Image (cartoon, rainbow, N blue to C red; front, side, top):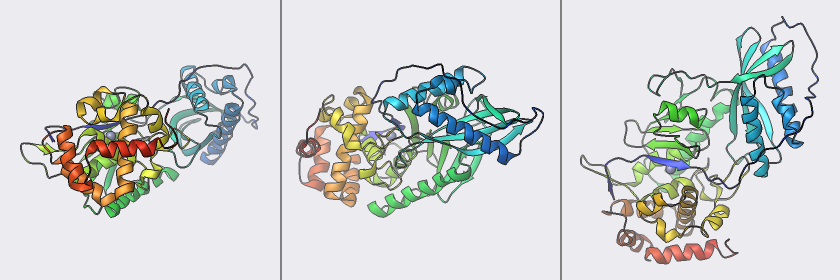
Length: 404
Ligand SMILES: [Zn+2]
């Protein structure tokens, strides 16, 4: 189907609802004392911050929210972290692990630390970047920071890290230390897609990584990140293709760049693209380091939740056949539309293979529109079945053990 402009995004699926609570127990961090005038070494500061986040882990396990808040000098950052922790508890994240992945001396007794919050290694972790002040060896959180200043993404002084196929623009406090592994993971995902589908992918992509979606919204003029669920955007038609994203969809957005290799080449007057149900479905299905639809992390928070688990819930709320057109897809709840598109594409890939899916994607993108007739031309051509027959077979398999 033909489009003048395309900006492809990812929306997160909110499965659980948060609530608040608290206790009045005081912090129990036991630290050796020293004179307030001393400046700690970087190693000593890192050690003390590690002790503090271990204290947070224990407070999290015991729901002692006041203990966490009391380690912040202001209220808003502490309340924000505790609100997030309460949401994680509601999402049944029981083994919260917090690690400082990068610590940098800032001034006098102040250090910036990037903290990684994780549970299941198959899920993408969450991050917060805090400024810690030390009174002697006792750290307290003075506030949060991003390390990025500017009014839009073009005039920000980004830190830049290059890998073989990505130019990554990021905060000086991200993609550091152990987190440089993410670059290798992005490259690995790209290699997997190229190998499995037998396609030649675009050589380069620019990749702007934002520490949070609020900053992403501000620096992109609300093009991306305008709601808390809108967490990443890709324009494959800039040169090089450009990705704006937070970390959570790190494996989703590059798929939209790779879709260039699955579509007919753009002409001066038009670009031919697949309907959102299949385009977003493909990005959801392949969003993991292995680009393996059985490992899609779309439904994961800090714990891993298989894609079909939430598709089984979504199918009771949204009729998949209504999602085929872009109009129907955009009118539906984004979480349901993305999960169902992802589950359907997963079915096609696993039942019929990756390379037939690449042919199907191309044939569908080459159709003039996104009607059932257009879909049928592609599904009959590649899978020898009508689209409703395929959708029905997928739903039958998805719900074999029951759908809610
Ligand atoms: Zn997307």
